[in-house]
Length: 194
Image 1: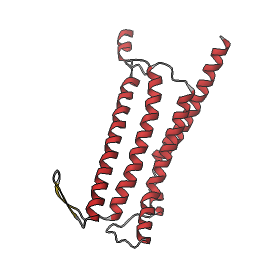
Image 2: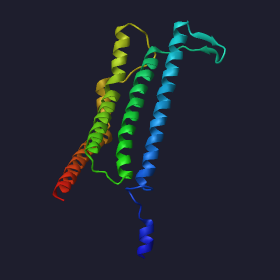
Image 3: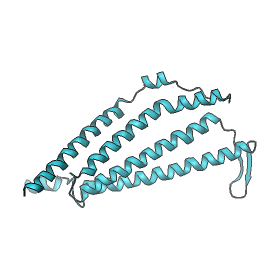
Image 4: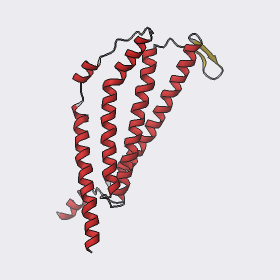
């Protein structure tokens, strides 16, 4: 029976472990976020060029491009999409560092505590951006007198739609950062006593 149990156990740390697989998935998320950021900016640049040329651009590669972009949608896509992609890239970079230490079998290093704190701050920033960026863009566009076809949700309504799961994850990451910080401290203490 113990042979079957050993076979079913999934190693979490070390080479060939679940951490190795998760590190690869994090790399894929990072690459996907980079590609999405590039795509967002290509669309944004094409939209700006098309809007400046009166709504129609002819190109030998793409042919005729006709666009009647709403300034709010374009600004929102560029800003919110960029914030989200850069946030995902930052989180993935920090997670990659954590998983590298797990694959090496040495998770309790001071850098991992710092990485978890950074991830918590990035998640908090992304949630605050979700609440405040679109209403701020709409306010600025309205102050400039530009007409938009989109009704936006105000800050008060967005606050009522707060994502408690994200805030819960932020708190868990803060606790994890303290656990890893304490683990690194205990590890250093143990090295000193040997």
